[in-house]
Length: 118
Figure 1 (cartoon, one colour):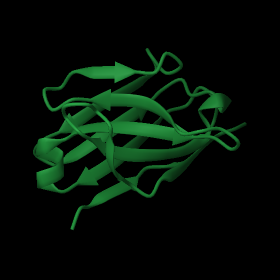
Figure 2 (figure 1 turned 90 degrees about the vertical axis):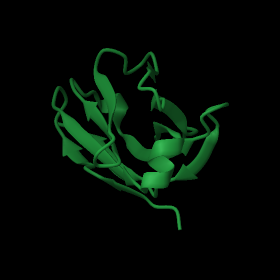
Figure 3 (figure 1 turned 45 degrees about the vertical axis):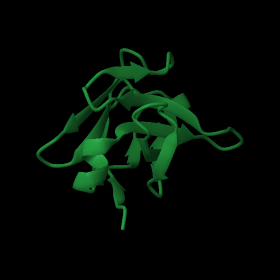
């Protein structure tokens, strides 16, 4: 059974910070790239950040310089540190395991709500 369990969502003030966590099985974590997507109301799901098995990262332009994706191999966990948050960051955030060759989505978490509001 594949496991992708997210946590850390919630309400935060503009300019504040939040850290999302995604715990994966050892098999998935060691063999797949990991990514964070988000989906705001009325919008399609978009890629926020991706980290490869080797540790290389890519970010959407909208979050570059504010968000940091990282992975802890010992804990089989990927994180998304979100700083200087804006109301536009409000969305459901999804953890995803991506195929290492093409980086296409393979396994999804159930999503966690992030709301940035004053």
